[in-house]
Image (cartoon, rainbow, N blue to C red):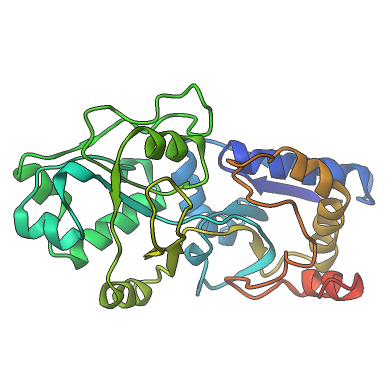
Length: 303
C-alpha cells in the first residue's frame, strides 16, 4: 500500500500536483493506497522549506522554484523539470535616471520599492537582500535614506484585474516576469531595467544564485538583453529513498495527464511557459535524476 503526500505550495503547483495525484489514483497503485496534495501558507516559505520537509519524511514528493534552490542539496532527487522561463527583474522609473544598483548606494536614493518581503519566505526576497549586500547597502539603509518597501504585491499577479503595483512606486524588484502583473506595469510606466554587472553575477553564483538574461523585447522598454539572476524552473523532486515504483508511477501519471496539465497554462502570460514535452522534463536537473525516473525516461525513449 502506498501513502504518498505531495507538497504543492501555491495555486500553480496545486494545478500540476492534483492532476498527477489523479493520474496515480487511476493507475496501478495497490488497493487502499492514498495520494494527497498538500498546500498551505505562506506559499513561498513552504516552497523554500520543502527540501527539509521532504528529507524529514513529512512529504515524499514536492514542487519548488527556482531550480537553483535545489542545487547541491543532499538527499534529494529530481523527477521532472517543467518549462518555466523566469528572471529577476530590477525596474526603476526612468525619471530617476538609475542605471545600476551602484547608483542607489552612491546617491543614497530613498526609493519606494515594490518587492517581496522577508516575512513571506520568498526566494526573491532572500536573493534581493543578498544582492543589495553585494552592492554595499541593506534594506535598513534604503529606509534610512527615506525609502521603504511597499507591501503591494498582488495576491494573484496573473489576474488582469489585479492592481499590479502601488502607483506611488519608484522601483519594482521581483520575478514572475511572464505574468499579467509585469505586462501591465511595463505597458503603463516608462522604466529602466537595471543589469547586474558580471563581477556581481559571479559572486551571486558563488552564493548559489544562477545567472540569467532578461531578453530584449520580453517586456516593453527592454531594448537589449539585461544580465540578471535566473528564476527559471519548476522542479518536481523527491527524497532519494523514494521507491523506484512510486517514482515511475508519478511519471506515468504525469505522462497520462500532460495535456490536461498543459491546458491549465495557456496564453502569453502562462506561468508554465510552454506545454509539457516529455523529452525535456529530465534535462538539466538541479539534483540528479531519481533512478526510477531515469529508467522511466530511458525506457520510454525520452532520454
